[in-house]
Image 1: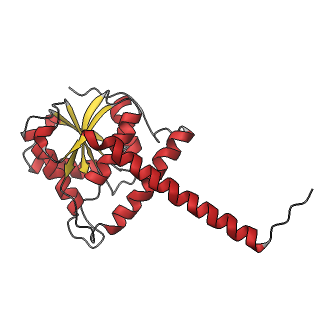
Image 2: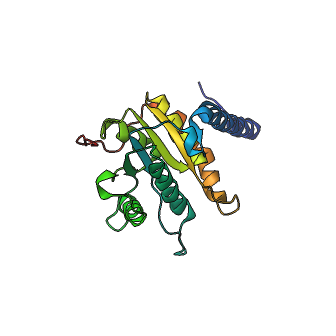
Image 3: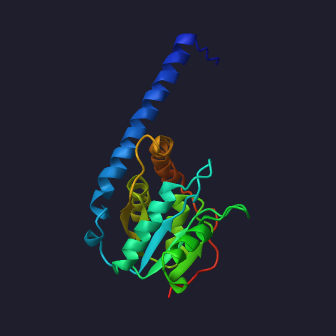
Length: 216
């Protein structure tokens, strides 16, 4: 049996696919924001005390060579959380996929400059994605609970992923970047939330796991 598709049928199919994508994107964003609201705060006193804080990586510099405010504000938030006695150790999780690019090392240097002692810092060089960072903190570093340190939009997705995998995670919101400067990041985040659900459906695993590391 042969099937023939006229132009109108093709147009309708494309339009339907687009509507479904938009609807699913809206659902993914609404669900993540709603489900994580009780576990995220910009107030350090509102968070529980936990052993570990997981700082999510980003480049310290923008493409134009200027300081990346996302990075700067995350370091400031990490120090505030530590100084308040809310955490005792850090897992710095980021991308080190190339020799010349090392997010965890850059975060460590910044925290050391902020007078955080070296012996409370652990580096996760395989945090290539937020999903990887969350699961590796549990399976490699042995943490069943932790506080995530990033901007609110990022914390919402990270906390959702962690809690969906049985981790008692909270998020401490670093200062955000103004909407105009962060437009591309926020747009990318909108669609990254759709991938959270497709990853779960497909049973995606972290790119690397490896030997366990004890945080002590």
